[in-house]
Length: 177
Image 1 (cartoon, rainbow, N blue to C red):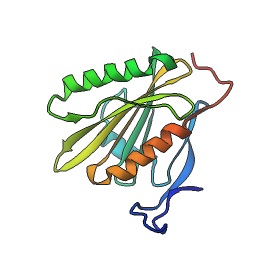
Image 2: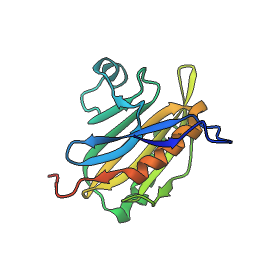
Image 3: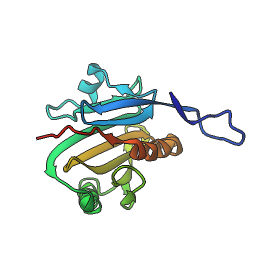
Image 4: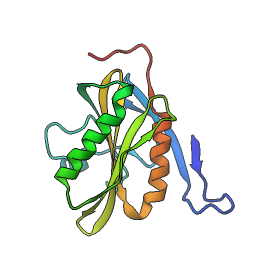
């Protein structure tokens, strides 16, 4: 088990974040994620995602305050199109959520493959949350990641996301249809 941050480090204001290697999609992707995240239990999935075509992989903390989803869409996408794909998703979110604050699109290019991402600040009930959308190509297909976390924990989860982007790895030799 690796450690992204340890609160015992002199001058560190961050909570300790212990990491574990997880399979995101069987025979397709792995990444290092905080050990507090696990596959969301069915009762929470039914509560938060009560529709048929929910993402293939949904992770959460034990009470669902932190959520991360992963889904492979059957739309062609290559690494040279990441910025445009993230920008198109950004425009769509601006139209769907015109009152929410949305960051500009950013490109993270230090991992195995570039990742285009942006975040939105939203109010869910009485809690303000950050909702991150990220786009990456996986075996030539459009791969969408989302993460929702309390705004008060923004520093922690922004660091986790960048670590995720840099440790997300495709498994060799397996091709999707």
